[in-house]
Length: 315
Image (cartoon, rainbow, N blue to C red; front, side, top):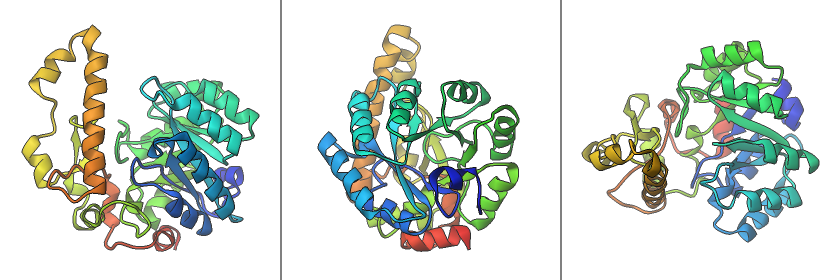
């Protein structure tokens, strides 16, 4: 399974354990590295810079040949910690950074000076060309089967369009829950895949047993888009609570979002409220279950160790 991604990160298999807010942690990524793939953690999973620094040191200690680790950075103004997080990662070292939601220019420049590769989330060719011009090492093609904030195009259409027009490698994100899915994405021309949702139901994930079990009990047909978390459509499991509160923004938010001056502030408030609700559901047993996941949980039949989930993706 040698591809441009395995060459870039010196990993055995062309798979990245995707960064998942509140879910990804050092133990998960350590087991991913031991299994021959790369693992990634959102920098925002750490409340303080010292916690982030400590996580990097642990991952460097735990690293083995054939594995790699990285961090995901939100690079727009909503993340006020962004520059400090980037500085810590560059100081301590990391194999790669994945950027989301903003211009990666500063990240690419500083990370490359520190010998760190940068992959950038994109949902269409327009942004993919921009990140290539800025010097990104690869494009993460977020398709319409991804969990969380997904793209608009099918994996096949997006991968083929980016491959036709880019010189940098394309890594597909979304719609992978088993070996057949990995093969399909590579067949479309992807140099690797980013896999998230199947790892929620791992023994190493530090979320509630209820969240993990939901990924086993529910399937692709139970995934819905909601505007009630971040203000931007996001995929969640359609639990009884989600059905009760609905998936559309409130009429007040709808009115305020039409005001150009207020729109930004409404989104920020919605994002803050939504993230707190998501964190509570992920970390505590509560009837207010807003669990983020993608349709690839269709293939999740049991809570398993990370190493077994990886085996199911490559066997």
